[in-house]
Length: 127
Image (cartoon, helix red, strand yellow):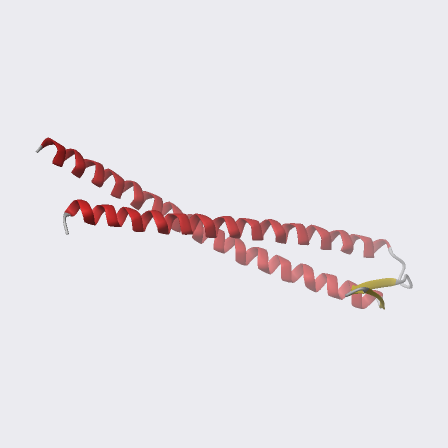
C-alpha cells in the first residue's frame, strides 16, 4: 500500500473517531443540561418545603395516584435527590472535560494527517 493510500485510510479513521467524539460530547452536554433542570426543580421544591408548616399535607405522585406523605420523609427524599443529582453533575462534568481533551487531541491529529496528505499529493503532482 502506498504512503498516499495509508494517509487516506488514516484520515478516514481519524475523521470517524472525531465525529464519534463530537457526538459523545453533545450527548454529555444534553445530559448535563437535563441534570441542571432537575436540580433547579428539586431546589424549588426544597424552598417550598421551608415555607410549609410541619403539619401541612404533602402528596407524592406515584403513577396515576397521589399518595399522602410525611413532610419529614418528603424533605429527606428531596435532599437525597439533590445530593444524587449533584454527584451526577460532577460525574458528567468530568466526562465532558475528558471528551473535550480527547476531541481536541483527535482534531490536531486530523489536521496533521490532512496536511501530510496535501503535501504528499502536491509532491506527486510535481513528478
